[in-house]
Length: 445
Image (cartoon, rainbow, N blue to C red; front, side):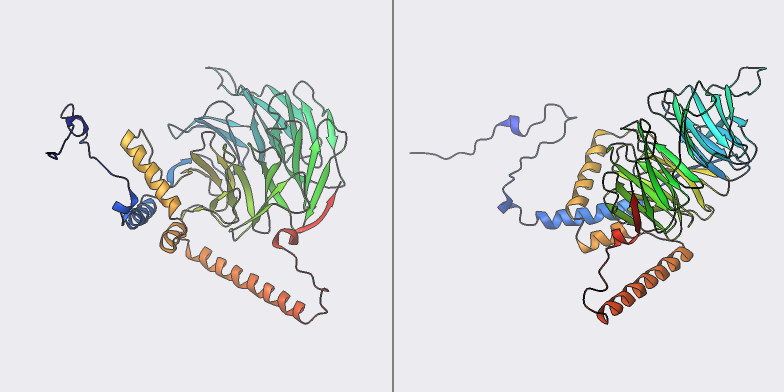
């Protein structure tokens, strides 16, 4: 006769010590867990709500400038060092961990128009309204020594932008033309012009280091190769681009900030139309900077906000604003991809979290696991109406909200007019122009 007995192995459920977590046997057969999706949905909803509750992006304000902050530069090798230049010619070096200014120098008369740190991090360059390029040591002068630049170059015209080569002792400036300089010489080794009276910014490609791009006052974006004697090509848009930034991970892509409230991401091989138009700002976009991962970028606008866009999305995922922050002139994304820095009209530099609800400091293993689990849940249920509504909702100042509504009304009116014109015209005489092609006037080679 067979006798059925329950057999249990104590190793499966008995703890070795009283400090161990209780072992719980689980059968993962989906038929035994009919309400699993419901439970996960509730957890995802709660995780989304808590994400918004803990979204406190503002970290610190660095004040000390006596005029509006006009430009900023990241240190090439130090995460904690930031340089900023203001409209009164003053340059400050900041320690971001202590939130304090460690050095101040009067670099120029008038605006500091651009600044960049050399790739080795031992010195930095500034350009200003006084038609000079100055090179400064990164270390502060010793006791009794005067603050003097290592090198000063006097130019013929005002310089409006500056960038340094990633590997060699070369740098580029722009003003009435784009000049390539050698650090050892006092005159440019190459100059590029293309029938334009002035340029607003110039930037080297971080991957293909011989290439550079500039924004010109005739509404064009011009591409150059240092090995060539003439510019490569240019794209003319309906309105002027203020500045641009190359994607640090994908050599071909760059994003330009425009006066028409939009940002445009281009593939430099196909300039006929942008690969993405990023729309959300309600005033001119003044600056843009990519995250070191190349997945996102941050933009600064005249509408007193900064926005974070995924590179392949036409809408921003985050908007930051404060009551005191005025027109944001410059913005930078920190080299560890965790923080965003913005410099604005009212003499302040602000430090923000790139991920608004991220917990700072050392996390325990269980905290990390919970964060990752919640993140996966939010991704799984991101298209559910409730989850999507909570995730997308952002509180905007009243003026900004009204401006946005007004813009939507104007866009809709334009679309309606276009539709009516097409409806009452000869078939094919009024072609449908896509949003991407609308803003391009011509591409010249």
